[in-house]
Length: 500
Image (cartoon, helix red, strand yellow):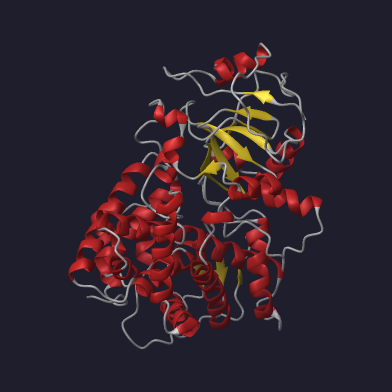
């Protein structure tokens, strides 16, 4: 393996990758002068020098969904071209927002578990130098903030402990209560379309279930749920509105925290306030819960339903036994999060054949890492739990959070199939050409049209009217004004959420 020297782009106007100091030094066979930390994945003793790819090689444009549309082919190509497991990538059109994508399972897990890589974005050299725009979607997704995911040391332990305690206290009453609450919400959503005989499951089912169920489980009221649903979809879209949407979300949750401090209840915000967190700290922990749950779980449900409808008849006797295995397979083969930026080097380090200085951004490649292991090892994706869907290392998803995510997916899928036993893909729909959401971070379908024998609703109360609200779901386009859609969703949420 050849170690390639790299350094951060110097401050100044945007410049082409091939003209940055990174590749200028590669052309000149430049030597690093700082001491280097030995990475366990690099076994060479060379100080060296020549890149194994031409200096003109441009970073892979992860910001362009069309460039990564055939991601299976892309993973295979990258693994062949970068055997060290690390790929230079560009995360936004701005050429200053670059990083290094991990593409092997061993490399990705190493970066997630090793203490030499930090989750604290204050180490980001390009951010320190003022080269990252304030409205950068990447900065909005992984920038410095006081929460359990982006903190380290004692502060990380404090936030994580408080969040875990709050999640566990909120889940008191056992798994039966959680499953029952999820099932109730799933049934009410199904009631909105079960008489029609056909529905698009992404904008009319999968996109609503996690948000509505989580709002109910954690005690948010109707007006809070309206804004949360709207802003979360905009954040996960990863476009130019990401930073503004995140700001709006924080403003909403600050109000939630202040309200819970005055009137505490049995919700995660109240539990963390009782645990000694400030309103600002509570705001960021609650934001973290929804940011890591809403869209990823929605696409886990959608991707699982698509796989089941592709591979099995809904009337198959053993279909329900296939649900947990299919969900696990999806976490391997089509994870709802392909990759996510979120680790930085803290000192010079040799990694994947490159010599990285402090402050370089590392992007965790869950999609390519899973592809790598599935194609090089005897792994059964139906049952193996060594996938990275719930994280790894000190920042892995808490057990309660993981269990809630799995419950949302399993109950959501099972309840739909039980209510509509002969559900099938809409006639003429090619299961291998289902349209996918144009998002860089999350991986899922934008449409899953199905048909079934019409059946009566099971709830005798006022029906929810979700079909007119599809403009609020991340998968759908919108023609209504924000005010009109928010009013419709507010009326819907008042039927189901506490505090109204």
